[in-house]
Amino acid sequence: MTWNIKTGGVDRGRRFRLPAIAEVIAAEKPDVLALQELRDFQRHGGRRMAELAGAVGMTAHLARSGFGMPVAVLVREPLRITHTAAVTWRLHHAAAVVVVDTGSVPLTVVSAHLDPFWPYRRMREARWLAARYVKGPHVVVAGDLNGLDPVADHTEALASQSPMFRKRHLFPDGRVDSRAVAAFGAAGLIDLWGTAGSGDGRTVPTTQGGGHEFGGMRLDYVLATPAVSEIAHDMRVLRGGPTEHASDHYPVRVDLDL
Image (cartoon, rainbow, N blue to C red; front, side, top):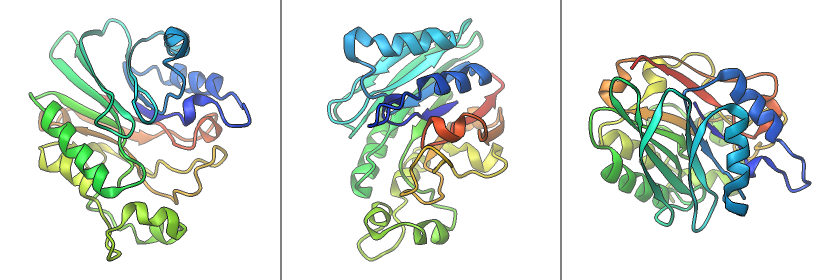
């Protein structure tokens, strides 16, 4: 499961959304969870990260950010993290990397949050991550990639945005810039929505959590190597209940039969 929880689960008006976030996670009980936009989760010795992980019964690896917000990967027993890495300065936000002992094969999971503002920088981040971490047969990259996929028609989604936000997804000549997601594809990763997804794939905005500047589009992805894509199924965007107000992004889940 992957989810951008929006500014650490706390709004500027101090509306505290973490209980709703924990409720969604506890209901889904993911074995592996990629979280993004964990503002202040590194403060006070990582207390907020520890509290959320404890509330949902998982173990967390947090990657701090030098510019934006931290990200994390969490796992649930009996899964075990055997190796960790963190990208703290090459990205506008960050990436957390873990190798998970699944009992059958080691699974590398990357929770990433790419540049939200500039398509070129987003593409460079994607290329660097793919070159560094897409190694081995069992790799998953999950997170808020802030980019459009290179296959779908984005005319309607972009038309609903103001020019200020629309330019985040366009070349200067007005063409859709989908190079970031395409970079992962060029590295051999498969967008699991195309093979395992069903229903409405748009992940932003939610009905009550803000994010209406996005337009209705898919910004959150689970990408995987071919070996993992062959065992992926039942992928969907989680809607309804507290997901409508817990964040401006909907969570995305997929089953992997490892």
